[in-house]
Image (cartoon, rainbow, N blue to C red; front, side, top):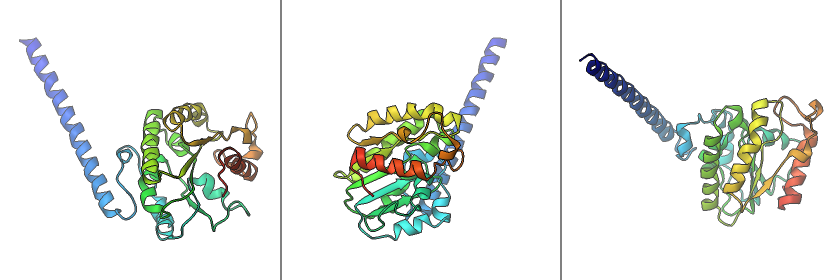
Length: 242
């Protein structure tokens, strides 16, 4: 009898926990749905939004308004995070008449996936460069599995939306963050396997080993020399000139 009571009590606890988990999931889905309704002009719905928090700077920092209102037709689009948001300010880094800098500091792969359908108005660009592919995801401690799955969705979305456009992906560069350094090559290898028809750029030749302080602005952002070196790799390896 005692054993039966214990089993019944255990079942009730498990059921209670399951109901709590389901309630939390319903609440999360509801909040996400309300968020997307309120921001329908800014974001598309994506599975990754259940696991990532979208970058508030995209709207609050004026990036969304600037990109969405830009109706110019560009040859090259650079979808990026702070690496390019910083680098494009160097004199001569890009030609603004042919290249759109679609970069928001703090963006992850999920941010790219959620916003490119709204932030890119060019109908048929020659190339879309994405930089970096998973950098902020690693810094936010998103699991490797989740990062790779989010990349799969992002890459598939680009393929569907821009079937004749060259896709160029710049991998995560060396930093002074150990966790990112330990995992960047792992995720890059898996993402390369999912997009073998794209052109991939390994930025490592642009950095010393071990990494030098003079090559970095801080623990994660590279300085001018690596920025120009990576730009040149994109041109040499992928024919992407911006």
